[in-house]
Amino acid sequence: MADDGTTRGQFLSLSTVGIGAVIGGVIGVPVTAYILAPVTDEADFQAVFLGKIDGFPADPSFKPTPATYVEDPQNPATSPGLAFVQNTGKSNTDWLAADAMFVVFSNRCMHLGCPVAVAQGVGFACPCHGGQYDKEGRRTAGPPIRPLDRFQWEIKNSDELWITQRWSVDFVNGRLTYFPVKMPGQPVAPPGPSVVADVLYPNVTYDHGPVPQPK
Amino acid sequence: MPIPAPDPKQMVLQAEDWVEYRSGFPTLVRKFLFRKVPPTGWFHTLGSSLLTVFIIQAVTGSLLAMTYNPSPNGAYESIRYITDQETLGWLIRGMHKWGASMMVILLFLHMGRVFFYGAYKYPRELTWLTGSLIFLTTMAMGLTGYLLVWDERAYWASVVAVNINGTAPVLGPFISKFLLGGPVFGAQTISRFYALHMLIIPALIGGLIFIHLWLVVKLGVTPWPGRPVAQDEAVGD
Image (cartoon, rainbow over all chains, first blue to last red; front, side, top):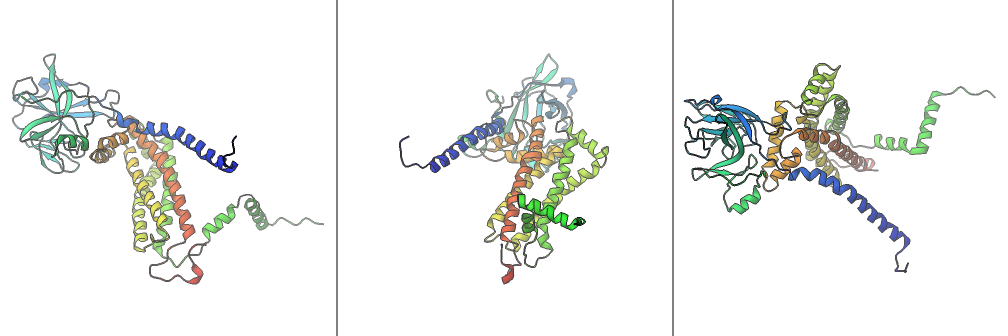
């Protein structure tokens, strides 16, 4: 070995630091990757059968029918969901039509995700922190910052109501507008350019396809 | 020559010498316990009260872990079994539950004492910082432990807590999925919280308490504010 002025002690110190770094990396990199891996997981919404359509009668006062479903069939104990099916008394089976037969609300409060309950004749109310919504799911009081999510639905086999996708909604200039799903508590259409909004409040990464336009 | 009868006191002292010569532990313990301290009051007992509660939490928590079942279908049932059927299960669980609240209350009182006595000032800044980390990790224990009861309140309180993190700009959804261990609340969430509550955070708190106590012993107890330190009670060794 050429004598470049490195002492035996310096060489051993550097070796110890270097081997230590290698050992740290061998342990640290997989551990970090393992812990952070769930961050990239995506949840796809799977179509769910809610019930026969005569189980969701129209009511003269506002009284949507609750329907339970399981969001993730692999984890039924931890993914129970509840949808509120409002029969509008009309007959169009196109869910986007102005005279659509049903409006299917999600019961997830848009404050922090508690389950809302129906306030008959009025709208919805959340037990956790007092959020209130009107008959269209629009916030009327309390901390929620946007209307209740809605489900895309369709009728299969002539009398089965299925929900096929979840959408976040807001009333932009008074008009119902659909958005990809965001966390409760995050605005779907914050003021400012939409690029900034998308960075500030990323979608919950559903593979959702094109955003529907109401007719 | 008659062999003298063994003297019990001498035997203990010899045993201590034997350990001392091989480990030095008796000196360590004596230095830890027999220190010079300035005149103190009841407020100075809050720190050792916290240590006591932490030990209670560690012991009762270990016992609960022997019966607790961290799964979506088994958690609530195992809690009910501990509370209603296991011998003294109600007591161990009660100690752990009330101990958790006591720990948070004592922590705030202890922090208040240190703050109002000005005990965080030079040279004790690191003691305050490690104490702050103990405060944060204790809060994390409260959060992760709350879910484990797995009743409606536990479930929805945890949903709310995760969603509070989820509302953060930019990183919100990622933090939320990190906490949940996936995109939605699932079986993996309860085992994740269980591992954090049982293994990772307690180890962190244990290490932090060690450093905190090391600093307390090294720097000495803070006297009353504004009171001059006498010559014979100089700070530290």
